[in-house]
Structures are given as C-alpha cells and as structure tokens.
Length: 291
Image (cartoon, rainbow, N blue to C red; front, side):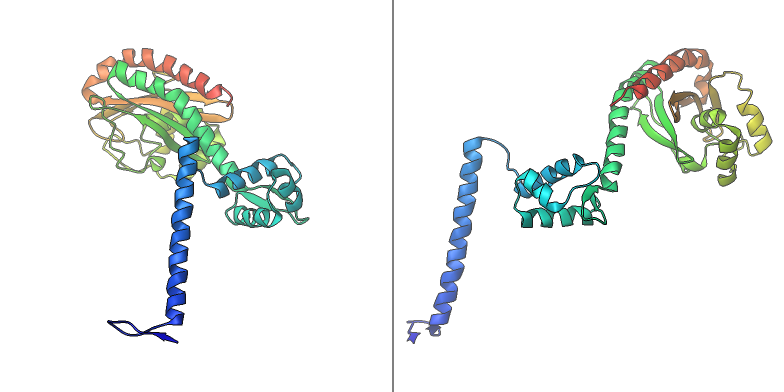
C-alpha cells in the first residue's frame, strides 16, 4: 500500500510506522522530562542521581562486613534487585572502590583508602591554615608548611599575599632540601639512616653561590644551628631571599614550618623566631587532633 502525496516522493507504510515510533519516543521523553521536573518542583530539592545513591548504599553495606559479604546479602541489605546490585558491584570493583574476594565476598578497595588519606590531609590542613595565615599577616612574609613523606620533603601548604609574596620555587622542592630552611629543618630531625638515604638520592646541587654543596659541611651546620631549634637559608636557594624554619611533629609525622623574606629584612630574625616557634607549636597541636 502506498499513500500518495501532493508533493515529493511517495511515503510507504514502513515510513509511517518508523515516523510514528520516533514521534512516540520523542513524546515519551517529553513526558518523562516533565514528570522529573514536577518531581523536582514538588520536593523542592536538588536533582539526585539514583544510581549514585544505590552505589553509595552498597559501599556502606560492604563497609559493615569486615570479612566480606556476597552480592545476594548486600542486595538484600540495601533493598536492591540482585541484578542491579551485581552491575553496581562489578563497576565498583573495576574502579577499585571495592574488591572481590576468592570466596565471592566483597570488601572495601584500595581506592577508598586513598580517598580517606587524602581527605584526612585536607582536614588537617584546614585546621592549621589559619595559623599560617596569621603568621603571614603578623610578619608580612609568606608562610610554608612541609611534610616528610615516603622519604621526600614535600610542600603541603603555602599561604602568601600581595604584601607577602612566596619565593619562586624554580627548582623542584623535593630536590632542594639541602638548600632551603624548610628542608634543612626536616633533615636536622631525621635519624642518621634516614638523613643518609635522602642525601644519597638528592645531590647537593649548586643553586646559588651560597649553596652548601659539601655533605660534611651541611651535616655540621645541621647539628650546630646557632638559632636552634630553627634553621636558616641565607640566600642558598634564591639570591635576595632568606628563609627561617622550625620543625613540627605529630607522632610519626615530621615536617617544618617556615617563612621567607627579603635578605635586607634579616635584622628581624629575633622577632621572626619569637612568632615562628609558638606558631609551630600551634600547628603541632592542630595536627595531633584526631579526625
């Protein structure tokens, strides 16, 4: 059967059926969208993704079973259809958020531990950041916080401002522990084995004419700082800039708190130490609080 048209080619029944199907699908989408809009309007809340909520419920259920739980049990506890639970569990396993045991049970994966560690670090930094900001404002200097992690000295936070610019970290900080007050403060606190390990992996590069490039001389100065517990960097990392740092501790965590300033402001060293040491104590207390 063919339906004649006044203009253009003939339209077959198959064409009509296909067009009707497309129009029906379009109308269904419109109805669904309108329904979703009404739902949002009725509850007044944000648009929520159900699949995300289901995945999170599964994660919570998995976390309640230290030795793992099978998919059927997790589906029952979360009220999810078994097929849905299987699909979500498979996705979570693929992305590392949960792990499937040999016996078929599911436990939390390494990715969650990474998220926990990162989140814990963010919380700790949020606690100590006000102390760094106060130090910056009191001394008109940029303030820095480092941590010794996995054998490296890493900058965790810098708080600066227009009147307290940070030093240009033109050389990777992890490779310049011998030339910065922040790095030397950490090295001074390390035991001999850890100190030797760090220095064996990081050559004493000559960054400025004032950089200490002799290991025996560096060790001698670390152990005999005239401003202990603080240490200084006298234009050893960047010409025109000096730094002062003191250690911070929290259990197994070691780090340093320091400030940088122009070399012509070094006459304020006593004032800086008077502010820096109490600030380090406040940072240590902030890091020691449990989360």
